[in-house]
Structures are given as structure tokens and as C-alpha cells.
Image (cartoon, rainbow, N blue to C red):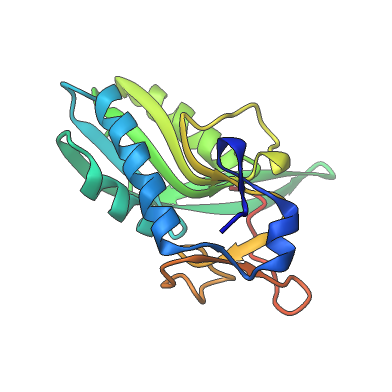
Length: 197
């Protein structure tokens, strides 16, 4: 597939021409590359992998299987609420279950990072809880939608403005089981509410 450009970016032209954006072979090849890099960076340490549900579960599964360091696997599900105070709105992020990160080398794993608000919040929270280190791994990085100053330490692919499904991503919950990533036509289906990711 010729939809990948330099630096694993996805070209908008190829997205329009093809419904399958990333096939299983492309995904697994990139995950093996990421796993080698992460294994080298975490050499001599135990990696505390924390996947953000739901989007991060498939990426985490394949990634940790390829790591060559000891791994602790944990999961977290953030919930966002919009609060109105004094005529202004603000987003509040809660999550469950709580995870133990004190003195751990945390690798936060996201399927898709868009605004970066949730990832940024969780990373700061883990640091405040005494994590020895915190890094971010994103399967897809939609940096054009970023609302905070955040860059993943590791990423699979850079995404343009398209809505996608498959490989753990869905709209809102369908198609997460697909072994590939496909483009979703925003005129035919409601795009997922990812404004806080």
C-alpha cells in the first residue's frame, strides 16, 4: 500500500482512494519496530504498561507480546464530564480503576492520541503519584488535533483528519475487532467522540 509517507505519516490522497488504511502486515511490522526501540529504552527495567481503554487494548496486546523486558500490564478507563461554572465550561477527567505506579517505569499506551488532553492529564497524574518515569506510546498520532503541548515518545503512524475504525478503534464500539485500520466515511456514520483523547 502506498499510503505511507516519510516518518510513517498517512497521506490524505491515499486515504480517499482506499478504504483500508493499514493492513495487518503493516501494523505488525511497525509494532515490532516499536517493541525493539522500547525494549532497548527499558533495558534493565520493568515496564509498567498502562493501556487506555477502549482504544488502546489491541495495540497494547501486540506491543507487550513483542517486548523483550519484564512487563506489568494494567488498564485504565478515563471518563470525561463537562462542567458549567459561572457561565464557562471545563472538562473534568475521572478514571477507573486506580493503578499503582509508585517507583514504576510507566508506559502509557493509547490507540489514538488527538487533542492530547487525557494523555497529558494521566501522565502528570502518574508523575505526581511517584512514578519513576512516564512515557507515551500511541498507535495513531493525530497531531493536527492537538490542544496541549504533547508529543508521544513512541508512535506507530501519523493520522490526518480522517476518522478510522479497526484495530481497537471504533465508532463508537463497532469494528474494534478488525485486524486492520480502515477509513470511516463521516457522512455515513457518526464519528467517535474523541475530543478529549
